[in-house]
Length: 302
Image (tube, rainbow, N blue to C red; front, side, top):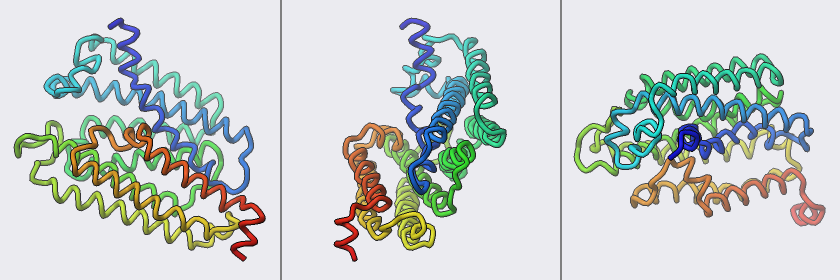
């Protein structure tokens, strides 16, 4: 493997798709967004992606020993020695500098604060908090939800408390699913390397994860019945159709995890899984239908 190819692998460009969460406030905002707002959202997502790659490099440098003992992570560029460890710090500095320059040039100062907070949170998570029982899950969910908040700051779109509440619970569930998969793959009752969990914790991790999933669905139901939805959607009742799809998707994630068929980070899995993408597409279609209903639908409902 060439040094250039190894460098791109270390950046984990396939993980950049997670930063599309920055665009969620634009998608859910009333009306059709202006192209300038969309461009600001895309630049914010790019800045977050660069910072995320810097965090991945830091994480790989800190986890060299455990990665080299792992059956798949040992193939990562630094663990496999395809990239020398001395190349890590300059790479991190370059990524952070590029993200900061992009943000200073085009985005609000408040967004730069949010970006810096995300980077600090990522580093603290990688160096300390991911080894702390339960705190790791909450911080991981918080970092995902932080992207949504930062998207609102970058574009000037207000992020509702309902959206943040839903994000926190659904990402807590997915973070628990990630730990569940790691625990299930253990051959003994030993502690997970660089984690605070035992394989004996598997049932409780599953219970807390599924509970978080269904609480997120409850928050969605309360949101559908809120004044915010009635103000932003012409036919808010259509959103009820999204509930069974959401419940199906969350239940499927946990069933696959329990069967040992979820061999990936759940968020990354969802971005590659055809069924997950179909569920997301249908829910997006229902959101559009509720906001911009055709006359025939309005006539049928009323």
